[in-house]
Length: 64
Image 1: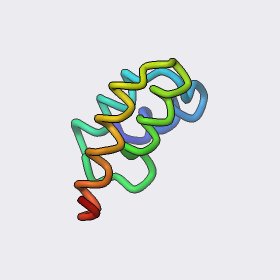
Image 2: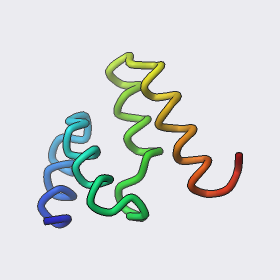
Image 3: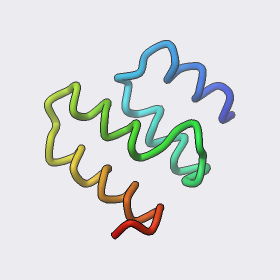
Image 4: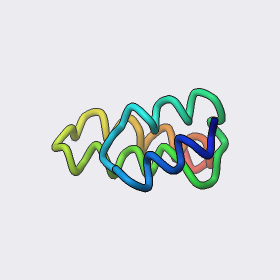
């Protein structure tokens, strides 16, 4: 399942639904991260959502 999500994200890096699905299954995935999700959200001008995603990434890595 994760390989399918990674493949779909690679072919369409702005389709955020696949980031959410992948992170729901495996939130500690190194290849698909909240940081990457945040980048996709920024590209869509969804800055508040991107900020929340970046904060999740920082919390996961113990930065904040």
